[in-house]
Image (cartoon, rainbow, N blue to C red; front, side):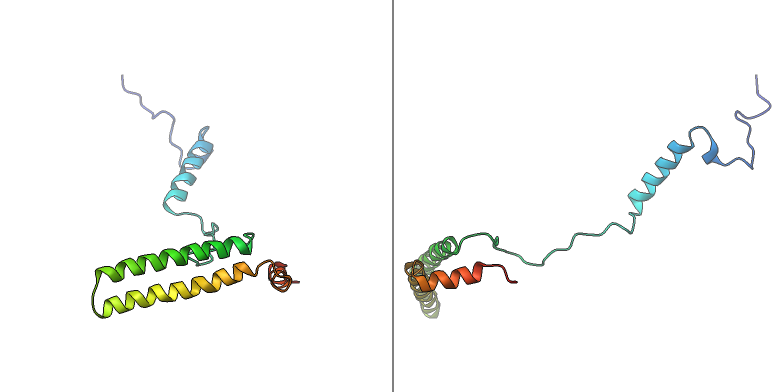
Length: 131
């Protein structure tokens, strides 16, 4: 048997949002729109554009000790490389090794004098927050 009228009857004056499931339809439409067209009010977080950073609360002695170890590693790598190459590349590798050794000595000197009253005052001044 064929029904003479559609179920429910279509009325051009009736909005599809006024049906009993209008809230579900509206929520689905909003989700679809938000998926394809994200709201403009969402702001992307700002980055400080630094590749590496050091946490501000780390003690200076720890930073210097790590720098000292890193310089020893750089020197060892460059010296090892100098053994494997000849000519001007050997000279460059040895120069890097010697420069790293020199900077390592400077860092070690600072570490040795870290307990001096003058150095402690300088470090305390640098680590105190600016007012």
